[in-house]
Image (tube, rainbow, N blue to C red; front, top):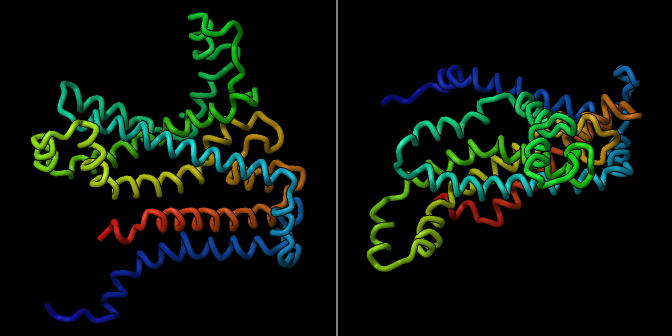
Length: 294
């Protein structure tokens, strides 16, 4: 094949380059610019603020609570999603009557809008008319209804349930693909050698599934960290920042807090990007992704 002229190559790549510039680079530059600017309460630019916005965010009284909520939210949702998805994938990779329909049912939460799914759970969690309280009181598990979204003891757990519910389909299918790629002969050979089901899973299946685990963990961490609709829809009725994560904290700083400060919100957005980059890079370093992807 002849050598492609650089101008021709750039012509073919130009749509992708334009998309990256317009959707990624330009908004990133504008976000950084906004984080170092001062705005009026109506959003009008009032000049440069230097690093004051970052200082205000880092000294904000509710920031420690928000950071704690973020860690709990991400760790709980990602960990539970991985564990439950592993079990579901082990089931759905087997051949049984109706497997196709079960797989279709599993993918439904992924296809539905996050806002619609979250609003559905708001109805299910309702104190007076929610199905969950109706069933629990009918079975005499509880004597009085539970305020799942109004009681501090249950709010975060209720949000985690929704986060896991919408994260399961993608993660399960990632693991199904990983399990399907494992040669059956390897597992059968271990079985012939006398390995128990647990030994086969721990010493053969799990190591061969590590690339899928890496992908699922990294993508879920980014996805859950940036999950705005679930937390906002379920937590909008509660005042303050008691159950917010960094992503909803950023929104409320600009539109719902006493400050209504776009510059502080933009500074939080920059910090959010840095946090998720550091977390992902640390995770990749810990699991030695270069070794695993060779």
